[in-house]
Image (cartoon, rainbow over all chains, first blue to last red):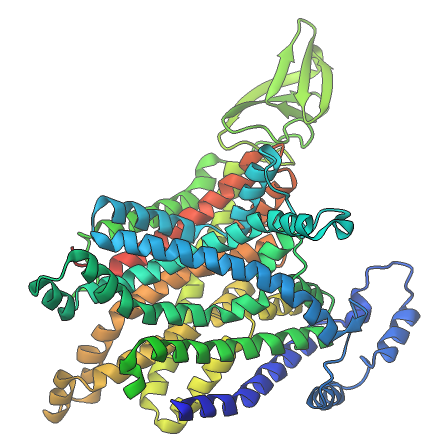
Length: 321
Length: 316
């Protein structure tokens, strides 16, 4: 186990470097630079050329790449053109909102997903199972942007229960702390529910399949033959081994936790990583795009590692091999 | 074990849904005939099932709306926050048709738009899925059979690709290339084969150690027979299931791209774009965002049902 962790961590810089290089290539292949995407008709071609020279965007791709690589190795992620501040600062500002949103969503996702899976495997093929499976399939097919629009239409436009966008109310900065917290939670409900619901459908599907797989394995039959109560069969003989697949699911959702959702964050104007990355990509903000993809790549690799470690933690059989 | 089990209700329902959507999308636009010329002012945002009355005027203009009144001397065309009165003498002919799903912001029939846009979704799913299957399966087989070095390189490459933020790739690629239908299909297909390659590789590696394969090898079965008799039948089930699910994901991915305005140019009424347009008038016209979204959900769910149906029989 220790060797696995060490080997994976040793691979980390290589993988991150690969991803960063690939990102750089794609950004370079995209036509135009930041100076061309500024939407200002009064900017003359000369001014745009000056901007390009000022930001060093007129240099050869190789030299831009090498200077970026050198800066990163010394711990400097560069400067964002769009946000006019260091990339590290931009990402640090965008991470907490994203973590709050995706963390809440993951919680909702797991709560709904696990309950659906447990209810439906009580009697596989029964009416509850069939209804829930069909429901989960239906939700699985729904595009998140559509669900988000529907939620806004129903719960903020028609019913007026929740705000339709943003993280804070206007002027909330001066409020006392408990009101601000309530305000934040109020704004969190819709985006987190949409993200959580979309995820829950996939979670429920995966978990149901995993649990069913366990239910047909011999140890359940043996337990029943010994006269173990049905409740014990469910909770300690079925749910316990299902924690492995669950751990995998949680580990694999770590990247989404960090990189957020472009669609939901854009629709709800949530100031998180997804939106930052989207703005950076559209504006060809090279340093910021690279910074975001670095963070994303590290999250993916650590997430995979976490998934394997969690699996080993709950399933002793994996530890042995 | 046969992969297709038509007795399974889910497989049947999913296939039926897919065939229904495919049929509607292929046969629908020609059957509905050429889109009647409507005017973008009065006919805009007519609710579903409303009857659109079109007045063809002597000067060649067409006025149409779902809200038309007639007085002895004139026609009063209302709708779209505008009222136009035309003398009866100017009206050459009157035609009526029904907008079953309502109209969009420019007075176009939503049903017609959705059927036209659905062709792209179907094409993305089937062709993109095919691309993913071809690339994924062949690389998976190469990784499983090509020796430790090839395997290691391919698997690390796949890890790196999976760690690459795919949306970023799509955003950037959509701006590099002129987004045509072929480009989008290739792009989506080429960014979604990694899981399949892993699956096929794992399947081949595990089947290779099974006793019946070992005994087949011992008894001197030629390599091509090994594949046609033993490997491919074992891969077919899981791979088919994965591809079906992935086709649904491709539809979702394309819809997301179109929604964000990165897909095809706005002249193609893709479902994602229609939802986007609907969101601009969410309060005035619920159908414009809701119905195309339902179409996406129906298509993706059909694929998911098929994938479910292809699964090993669930114990009951």
